[in-house]
Image (cartoon, rainbow, N blue to C red; front, side, top):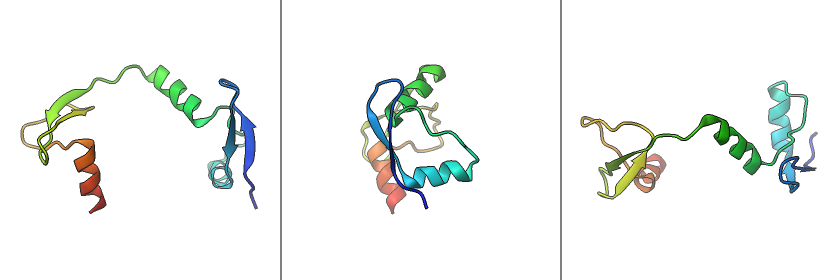
Length: 91
């Protein structure tokens, strides 16, 4: 039903693919317009309006490395680095 379409980003001018799956998702949400920006430019625009996120340092409960997390760590809950968290999530 849908076919991949190559579009040009209005910010950076690079070509990007609007996949059939993305088109189906847009249609299911009722969006009628095609995206005008590539994923990198959409993410950059989104992050620019959000502002800088405060990060906190904590020691990973699994491996002991320093982890930077976007929340205030509490003493009663373990904190994991990205690698250990991903391993736990996959198990």
